Length: 138
Image 1 (spheres, rainbow, N blue to C red):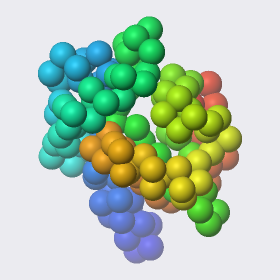
Image 2: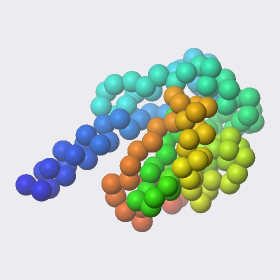
Image 3: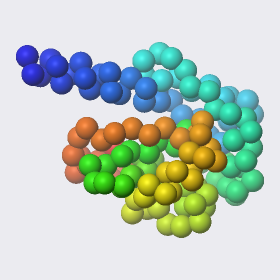
Image 4: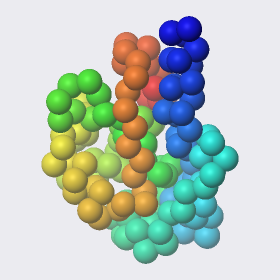
């Protein structure tokens, strides 16, 4: 019974997770709708995509995938980037600091203030020791 409750809760929890991501280049070319795991879609704001394109170097536009998925860890005020080295590099550029070791609440507030539609924050229901270190996704 507990397993079933956990399974239902986990499915509901992950229902808004992006099923696919787009590169900055694709978003600039007009692909602004992202499908979520529950079948609904999430719209990226064109103005926000254009805004990050001013900060992110052109050579990264095809490598950086958006929306950025950020995981809230079990530690108070601590977040990590669920993405490749390219998303980490892009967020480091946007925040003007190294985010490879994680983000703090102030960083998240700044990102949400500037790029609301380009950020998805999720909670970590699992131990992060299970991460796939090779490609940076959890």
